[in-house]
Length: 351
Image (cartoon, rainbow, N blue to C red; front, side, top):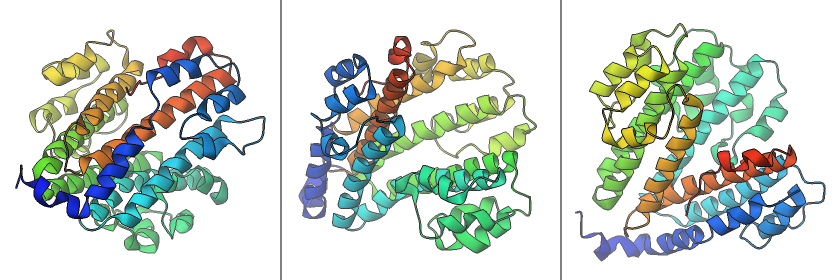
């Protein structure tokens, strides 16, 4: 049906696509970031943000401000916009919008379970959870002692239940198993989202499959680098990679064998898209890799807005807004800790 979306798309999706494109116009520009980088205190940042769409969310916050307050209020704006779009959406857009939040649900589950393992207070952990990934029974996660209990007591009623089939074992919840659980869940989630977008067809399928393939490849690289020097076997590492993407299947086979960062780099340089990302890094410089991947992702997300009559703009907008919040958190932390010389190191410019 590719090419004929214009005939029917606006019946159900036209209003929300206009809304999300309007929200995209409110993202901070390079000029805004330059102004924010000149700030001397967090109150200066608040003053500059008061002229943007974040203004109403920060205007009643008393001094002295904290970085967490700025991040919390900016995230609240994204949550309000997302909830408005979700309440207005009809199928299949409403399901698509729900899929966007599953990644946050996984992160919240891992946060609560890890915090419980270290005997942290559940209410304190709940405050740190991302609001887009909340669900009714999340507070009861603390009672689980192993994967099977985690599923049976809590997660069987959540949208993540089907993804748990791959990681339900009797193993106790320790640091290593929790990280394996996170990556197994993400793998199942990305594969399910990929199939759903494929089924939608048209421009949505074309653009979303490209964005999700990039996400799957990035996760494969991160898993390979983070598992170097751990007891994770090559076969176990391979099982955590998603079964799609530019690296699937031959790149995955090679990544599973890598034993240091430069070997990972050698594998990725065979792929022109990723060669350009790794070309920005010096040899052995793995700490700048995240920023290089974020910059590439932002470029792809911005391109999603170049086409019309598709759902990828909703995914792109949420991701771009999340990147903007990460930028604001970095700027605020640098200002609060008097590290202004490093302020440009962590900013990923969107426009």
